[in-house]
Length: 144
Image (cartoon, rainbow, N blue to C red):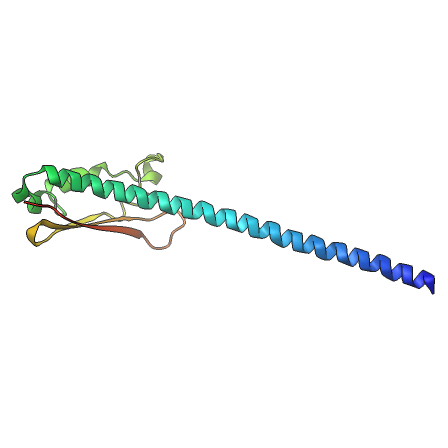
């Protein structure tokens, strides 16, 4: 009878070790998934920051322009808009990592100048693994 108890105890220890290894494996998989998520969110934050900087650069140019020319020069299709849009860099095509947005050439930005020079800038981008494009919208009042 003592031999039977020792065998069952040894089996219990083996089962306990297997369960511990399984729990440890799930913990490691959770940490790897958390790291992947943090990396993706960090990239998304970088793209959103780059979009904000690019939109702010255009707003700064508007503040320095003649107020009556803002509606024609800086709206989508205007000369200042086209110069700004041409300076937007698509990361995937240029193979650079600073001040660029992926997919920006396929998703061009829009600039709408409303009454009293109320400007709405929409910058769009599409990351390599994204299904739909992201967008950053800023609204600014340019004083006359």
